[in-house]
Length: 255
Ligand SMILES: Nc1nc2c(ncn2[C@@H]2O[C@H](COP(=O)(O)OP(=O)(O)O)[C@@H](O)[C@H]2O)c(=O)[nH]1
Ligand SMILES: [Mg+2]
Image 1 (cartoon, rainbow, N blue to C red):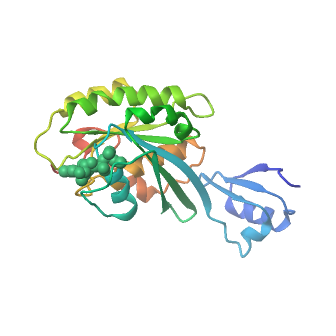
Image 2 (spheres, helix red, strand yellow):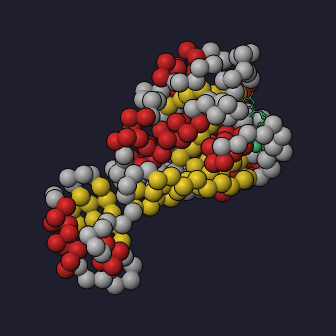
Image 3 (tube, rainbow, N blue to C red):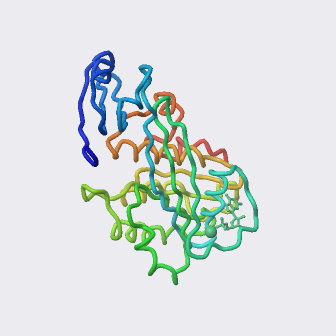
């Protein structure tokens, strides 16, 4: 039955197992209420030995903001845990893939699009924004202008992409370079701003020191998973994400 798909809900896992013994060969999406988990597979072979397959989710995340705020450094820190002072300015777009084992049954693949901040490339961004599931908008804490411009970036995203239900894609606001002393933007201002403009949260980060980089991404993934209808969020993960609600007080950035 090529292309066909069904969804069957179970209250208990043994009911799901019994069903799997009988099921003919076609694509199934199984939803287990007891644990709030969803599994997908193309035939019973994927579920043999009473072992449920890993569910895998791919998200496209765009990282935008003015030039030199630290977007490329952030992606490199997150994906490779490295930092260099001398990334040549991004031209066009760079891609990176990060694979996260989110829970026993859930793998998340993040396709990170590191988009150049230059004005002259904005005509290309509609293509880049297409089908994005989430967004990081970054500014440099030591550059007030880059903070003010985040509003333009947010409006740009909201006008160019939305979720299938018409709502805006989740956007996280990141205040990078928190390792530097010479700040031009204060926390109260950011706090008011992120609420007024419908960001899902904000935090200070330092790509240089690796502060709050993984935490910020984990928070965004959590929201994307929820919005994609999958509820397979590891309780352990939730315990370690300290960004809800995203306030400066919840940031663990010590700078
Ligand atoms: N002090 C400090 N410098 C940073 C940080 N992140 C990036 N930089 C520096 O800022 C400059 C621009 O970074 P880059 O990642 O190329 O910015 P992009 O243009 O937004 O991709 C580089 O010299 C980086 O070394 C950070 O967290 N702290
Ligand atoms: Mg760059």
